[in-house]
Length: 407
Image 1 (cartoon, helix red, strand yellow):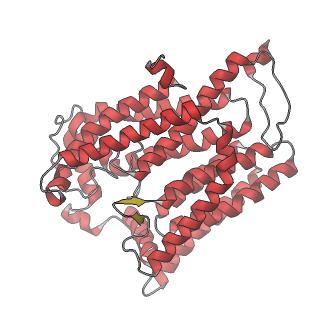
Image 2 (cartoon, helix red, strand yellow):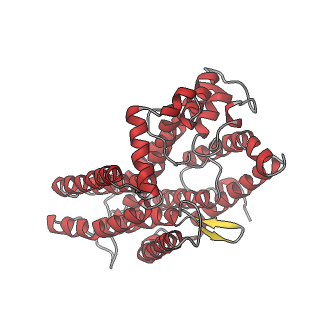
Image 3 (tube, helix red, strand yellow):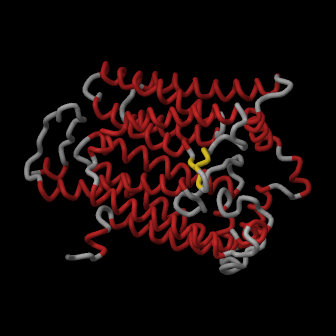
């Protein structure tokens, strides 16, 4: 049997190359950035976090290989509704456990013994799959587009609201992604503007409400505080002690060529150096040249995602790739923007680079879905001699292949 990489790493080779490069950088920077955490928590055993991160990277690659080689693309459409219902149930469970004080913290995670699970990660993927399924089935008439909007708006509102109770930035990220999918899916602009106005009104309501309440909920107060600090500045910045200040210092001290691998000083003082502000540590150690290179890798991934969408022969896979590509690119740009001070501080990790557990596995699922579609595109281009313009039963519409249309 042939076990060559070419037979195993099916799908878009450029995306595989991007993932491998990001993985190598991730291992180097996580090992460096978790040094202070290791001395605080693990008695100085820095190798513990490197091994853990390596294991999750390996599991992620294994998951992607499994998805590309075993699961057909249509299975993601089949499980979309069930995954959405399950994610809503888990989000409601997390909220209930938080407000009954059964679990401590922000309520983002559900404890599973030695591990933890973030329902929002499942909700992001499942809502994108569901939206892709609805948009894929309703594209022929204006009335169908209206029905698609109605079918998407309710679950989007429910999921984004539940996520916002513990993680507003993830909620906003998912909302922006669904808006992008509907825009590309030709949903009438009047509906889009109505939805955008509702989102802005929701944020304004929380901001104003937090100022009127004597004791606002913690997450509402956090949202208001982050907006105020971004607009008016953080009073703690006068002493140079905020995470954003440390991130700017890391980028400044890194310069063009950086201090060298493992020579970060700022990571010793940052609580989220290995996660939310990891891009700043990359620039500090490897310089702006590598920092720009990281941005370039995500741009390459974006353009490869566009290519996969254009080559898709069915609408559901095309919309699925749009949603998953955009949410990963948006997340990367937010992390980079926060690290450089261009955006308010949020809790978004750098996809496939930041230290993580279950979140990294769900990121792998997103990449696996995209790679599965790219591999299916390759199979279709090799197997189909003539375009077929029929509607599959209970499925989305087939798109005529441009290369076949030229024939």
